[in-house]
Length: 426
Image 1 (cartoon, rainbow, N blue to C red):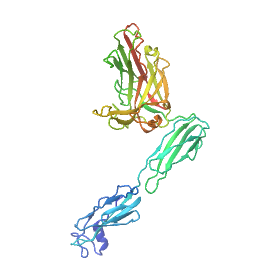
Image 2: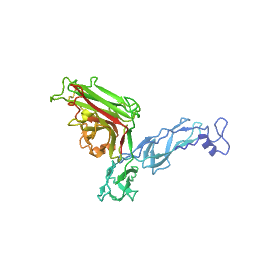
Image 3: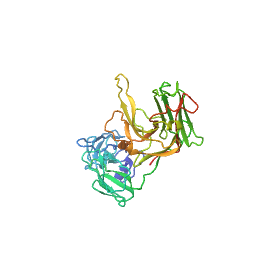
């Protein structure tokens, strides 16, 4: 907020006769104005540091400007230095005493000295069964010695005593974590909705379908890769991506032509089909990726998957689901002469298809483990999902088909996956 008092108005208030005609008066001289730039902005200082502001008002008449604090409990002035004493309103007046033919003038600034923000970390513990097991709630402020309190606004679903939550009935348990702040730090709250018993969290859609062979309906990139030891460990023209005409499904096919028919010899290979979050063609490099699905209390990733009969009939047709998070880390190369490598923390769960045909699957998010920590230690998968978005989802063959030949061939094997319908988290 800024209050301005014009020099003409001040002159008029001081004189019995009116102002005007050339801007002069019989008792005060010519009217002058003061330009007083807004001095607000800095937060209150964190002890032992003190926030100060340099005041820089100028008078059109060219004389020296002095300053007065109208709110000395909140801010004080020494010369042209304004010291912010405590949070609240600060009012400062810039004065020019007049002289050299100019009348006195003043200008006032009023602004708020804000408190410092604080960060409150309160992660959703996730869906819980309705039983008598007490739940310990954990939340921390980034400011030392600032305890957090908890309260429930849904007593029919849960109650809170101290930091212990008791489950009462089926429903959404709404818990508020509060740190009230003090003279230096602003208060902060965080609210979590925890499904109890039969209650479920809202469904989050990672993708709804497929626009073309390169993108989802949400303009996230799709694609895949496949390789065997027989083809130089790359697709080499053996991979194809197709999307149904109605956009309902995405198929990635790796049909590998072996140098000779499988006969028990070792053959290596890989298969991976992926989709990125809305609007992403690739992950951000050099910084966190902020785009993706943010998990709160969602319990599982849900999708529909099919694999070709040859792959399904092998001894290992398990599929790993990888969740690449927006958590970026620059990892030094083992060779100090080479540049650092880009890395994103990645989690992994798995499922074993029950049929080669399109089937709905659900993988519990709390079964996911960290498979790429990017050199970090002590990562908790659930905390990582709470703190960073899921920016990419991969479906990776635990062991691609390199043994069961296509019917009628002697040296061709296929690993093919099809995703149908949306991929969601709930």
